[in-house]
Length: 418
Image: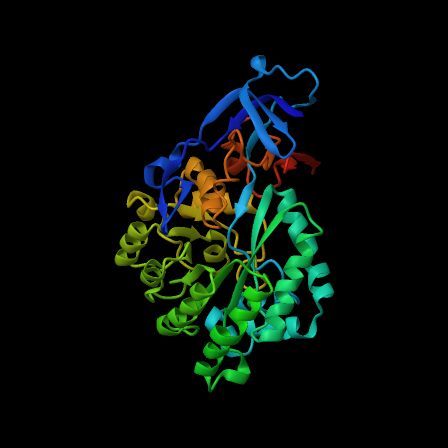
């Protein structure tokens, strides 16, 4: 038994709404309820094994044989759930960052052979072991910043052999870190050069060859498609999603990042768990996603990094949507694994409240990866994934931004000093 006691501020994000998200009941908070985060002062949390056993005031904590950790002056949140990343990759694209600062656009860099195709070349030259070793420091850094669960996409291989290589690297990395990695297949990230003139053949390969192998080998739970201008059309995306759903995969969508492309509306039609980015989402997309129960995963770090308009978070929340936050950690459009910085950007750039941002980065992030019945809030019976911050109250996490405020992470009931 482990007892965290004398917690100055405990944020539980508990007692959530419960309604159907994409036909599956999962705990989450939507609309104005995102501001309700369950604050308890001078609290204690008892952990038995990997599960939370008891929550209450410190003076009522009667566990004489427990190992005790004094949390005076500390704030405890559920561990962050980073529900959209490309954290496993090879190579370095700092030169493209410099090009962008000199005026080149994301699309211009891609057309010149940079962007996703640059990372593709690096991945194709790498081994599973080298991909894993190169990615482990980033995963550890995310963990030290309070992230206990990370969705990790493939998508830089763009052929069967190298997409499988990336997914095996994600699997290998998962065995070497405390953080939970949730694998997503993103073979439809871009059209590789060898299929530039025959894109319909590449779509067929994804649907008929890659997806069956990925499922047969148990390498990914979700299937994602970059559905946007210059990448995959709505029709191509739906063809891929039809194959993925047939093989039992859950669906995610890169939607409406670069243009109002109909990606949000498609996410609602195909029953996606989440649609992500959404910088250019239409009013119809907001309405249809809300009605279908699709989580809106927003990535303010990417908008900030690319100098694009932020997603309309305030409108989405006002319309009753469930909004999640994630880093989109990747080598080309947001080289950051820091969820604390993501919260700051959400509040300062998208005008979310601190409470809404915390909900979005914990419980709703867990809903975006179908884990909110087990993680994302501090409740009896849930897995003890917690982030302990060296600040007395939760607004300090955003107020004093750009530094790591985490002093300890508890993952599955085991404490890890940072």
